Image: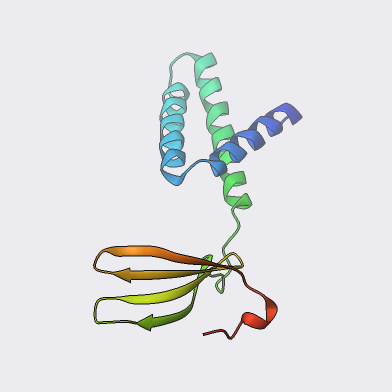
Length: 129
């Protein structure tokens, strides 16, 4: 494969990995169906173009899979529950840590509400109730 074809395949793989999963699946299915139709064409020129396109799609798919980074098993989402206190059977307050900041939230039958932004977490505040 030539260098321009490699660059094209790499660009296609980058765009596929940046797209949402549903869009990726639809794009891949549509492109595969179109190139498959070209590959089985009776015209030798179209058939050759279809086979080349199938090859590029396969290469782009392989590059997309190779670039996908597995999520570490111990990785947590960005929200940590620092503390919680029940006020009644249906209501409670909680301190949530999100990206180095703390928020006091209340939740009950009416939903969840932000009560206060407690600011950034300092090193000595790790054990704050």
